[in-house]
Length: 353
Image (cartoon, rainbow, N blue to C red):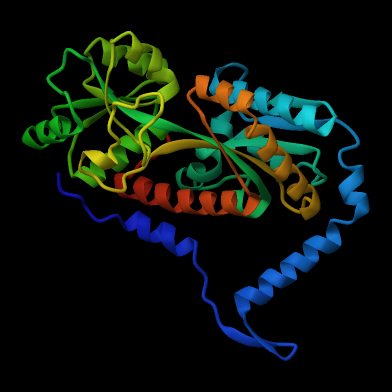
């Protein structure tokens, strides 16, 4: 399978690099980046004084979950809240704010007092995709929030019915090229991760297949099992029981490395599209202007929580791989993912109904 150019990869790379110049700082020649890093360190040290380090938190913390009760996102929010409460010795409450594709919850978090007592469990859609789908949003992720920490990722899996004459990624691509717009794919709905992932796959492999949107992964997976739709990208958590029951056949996984849950299933990258990656992810955000010392404290705490073996096992059982990252690393991830999915949305002309 021929690998096509990836313009979005170039965009992602560009957001992670800044121009550097040499300057003279107090008689010592150093780069501008070095000076900025030193200044940032000094500022952090000045803010992270005894009061900030010892008094926070003094009352319960709220984590907004921009979804309804139930499901993977809500479950993850409650696991993280319980872990933080144990570490911080204060109650951590989950506040579900569903509606409008996560916009209601994100707006509430953006407008909260930036004192470290309101956080939001953000995911790919609300943090990186919505900006390219809506002409007007009441929040801007990069402007209105301070990234606290990445939490984890979950892979997207390309699946089909065992009764179909599709046994590999290459089979699917070859058949789609032989008969353009005759194969169909299911998604959890317009502009969902499953939809965007297949649109990315289509661009990478230069194929044309018909989109059949559903209201959630459950109904989409059911019709793939029944053969009404040929194929789908679905989250590992949603299809794992069907794979175990041999009702769905996994063809490829969207991570760069094979999954421990499906060690015999090749990655899409290994199946003729080097570098292909499509994953869902979660992270914690705080309102902009939250004191850096508090953000740093929360970031360090959440990394301890997620590195506990018991927590990692619980997440693995949900189909989520614990991947605690720093505030700065999570910030770069959001920027890169925003650029990537903006490119896909524009090329596929995806609109919100």
